[in-house]
Length: 239
Image 1: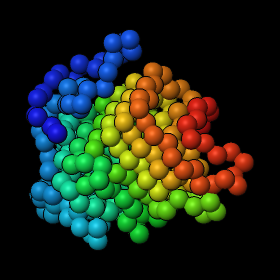
Image 2: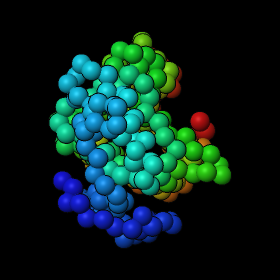
Image 3: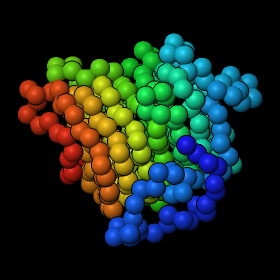
């Protein structure tokens, strides 16, 4: 769990020393600072997320993200529940952290209105990188993995020009799009104790322009598109 300890944001600035690096069981020891924001709490005129597996919670969660962005960052806490996402969650601010209750208890997945779009898409620029995105202790699902029904962009997470990506104890399940997690022109990427289960095309891709990547104790299980000429578990290369 999260004990609320704050550490400076610059605790992770610069290239990590892999010889001494170990992903801490206390995620906040690595990158956390700022308030804890319960996504079920209302913000202004926006009701809080329901997490009931019926309601489209995208607007409520996006309002929490926008609030955290306005104050320099924060930890979005997702109590147990199934949060349906009907529009891609996106931002360009630094220091946004998603914290679930457990990968078996907190689920973010597609609402029917999401269509063939990603759950989370972070896109900085070459002159304005996004710094520090983290996600832990939850399951991400987008569609249903299928041998013959891949939907391009129906993915879980994509980062572009992001410095500091921390993914810990996240299950990527039933990915119908091109990949579960993909990074392009991003650096300082850490994936620790994650599970990739049933994907249509690629579980994890590290594309052109990425630097300093650590994948530790992750499980990759069941690629579906056996008939696709290029089917990947973990891949690197041009994007």
